[in-house]
Image (tube, rainbow, N blue to C red; front, side, top):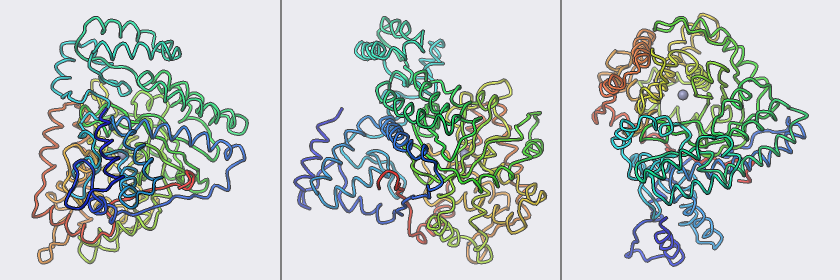
Amino acid sequence: MRTTGLLILALALAYPASAEEPRDGYWSEEQVGEILDVTLRLRLDPDLSHLTDAERAALPELLAAGRVMNDLYETQKHAEALDARRLLESLRTEDQGQRVLGLIDLYYMSKGPVATTLDNQRLPFLPVGDETDGKNVYPRDLSRTEIDAFVAANPEDSTRLKSERHVVRRVTADDISADLAMLDAHPGVDALHPALRSYLESKQSTGSGLYAVPYALAYAPQLAVARAHLEKAAAILADGTPDFADYLRLRARDFLSSDYEASDAAWVSGTFGNLNMQIGSYETYDDSLLGVKAFFSASLLARDPEKSAALERAVAGLQSIEDALPYDSNRTVRSNIPVGAYNIVADFGQARGTNTATILPNDADHTRKYGRTILVRYNILANPELFDNRTTRYAAVVATDYRDHLTMDGGFDRTLWHEVGHYLGVDKTADGVSLDEALADYADLLEEMKSDLVSLFAAPALRAAGYYDDDGMRAHYADGIRRTLQTVRRRPTQPYQNMQLMQFNYFMENGLIEPQADTGLLMVHYDRYHETATELLRQVLEIQRSGDRALARDFVNRWNYWDERLHGEVAADMRESMKYRRSIVKYAALGD
Ligand SMILES: [Zn+2]
């Protein structure tokens, strides 16, 4: 805990230093302004008039549970996050003017005290420690080499250390005692983890090395609060929407076990009313050390009944697309997958932002047994300001003839079929290992790349089935190109940006996109689209099937290159055209 730094921040903000006396550790109004000036502010205020009285009455409880997820997420990302936030909030009330308000906005947007600069660096803007690859779910100084060596010497610890819902710690007498005391204080956790006590005691006697505790224990007090809110919401909803109530109650219980199987099954299979909620820890994007730890999030969603029915019709007949995929498999996929169009009421933690769709759960066994739910986030996808921002950027770098090819529907279709793409293709390696485990830090990148490419691969089949007309298919394709264009040079730890860049490079080298000789603006050779996307998809599926991390690394190294004269120019042209490079999303339901 670095309270000293935060105290200095408090003093510095309360008694602003003169311009010639800059203090270390927090950003100036100018530094903050540089980012906030190019930030689009959105406020989501969906129509909730179709909610039943019970659904309306449950909202405050569900939002309160979401707030717990938000705090947990920020804690997972940075050990000093919540202290820094509380300090900033306390200064707001003292009317400290633009500097504090700007820092509060930046914290909100960054979901913690470390911001991404406009040239894509991660820097603390408050006097806190630097961000580490493993964030706050591993010891600060732990390297991949060290954990690999430890696991090699202690194979029996591998499962715990690499589990998606375990925090890794160094063995110290204090930490183990604290964990044992926490276990005493939470008998529910103790009961649902029968081997945990003896495991902790055995680690205590070794005196050194690494150990791991389930989130259920590491975050027991916070999860107890979330559970209470979910239980209350479930009681309110039990009569009107029993499936939703059951799901919430099971999820509350699963917070005690850190095993979501029961509640995932209830979530994916149940028939809910007008509300849905994603809540818990699922996505591993924030773990840049091993790529396995899940981070907390919540999304409270209001279902759009007509658009949802249209989506369900659209994704019928998935098996034929699965069967056509360029890999050798007899996989049977569900013909009937739960998909819905939702308006976001409020997002929390990892889920907060302009993410356009979600498909969960990720666990391959749960997916096989129960399927996955696809939540299309309609009031983000159909937001006119976000669409304007995308089209302006695209028009700045493609040749004149191609500028009008993006449409809102094209973006919607590409996104929807990206999510469906997660449903299809390789779900485990040929010898039955999970992709996360086998491909480790390359797993997310390849999975996202596969889904992008399945979306593009499906286009001709969708056209043939009458899902859209020629213009609709072209818009789907155009959005596939837009998706690959980078406005800044990526960091090696950003799975989405890297796999997009890789597609761009592959498309360039294979003549799907080509710069115009005179202007340098990009042309899209649609006639080469299917062949090119299919071949790249074939390679991705092959690597996933092999589970060979070295092969994955070679593949990524082959394709994720960046040339300032090409990528740098495209990025600069897009940046120049864009009014907004960031966004802050606020929610009417939270009183924003
Ligand atoms: Zn995805």
